[in-house]
Length: 127
Image (cartoon, rainbow, N blue to C red):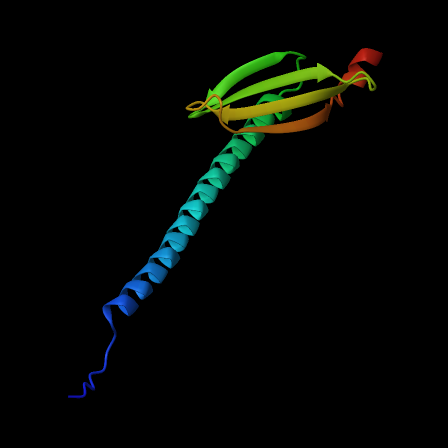
């Protein structure tokens, strides 16, 4: 008797399942990596925004910029502000703002470096 059944054998189905499982593992791994990258970018963006906020509030809004080091926090972000006199130019301050996550001290950091001129100081010294 001749068998004319059509269909797949068990071996063929198992081979297809193995191939599909490798593909699925690759897709899940890529999705997990994309999620980690997105989280890292979001963390760096919040650190950047906090650094710019420190720069705006502590430096730009003050008429005199003291040469010292100060620290503080904005929510879950800690910051360090270092202001030094520029050795090459009078009335120019070197400003360094570093932010980092308060939850993870060994985590990512973001640093803004700026030079700030004290425009009103020359007239006051000349008097």
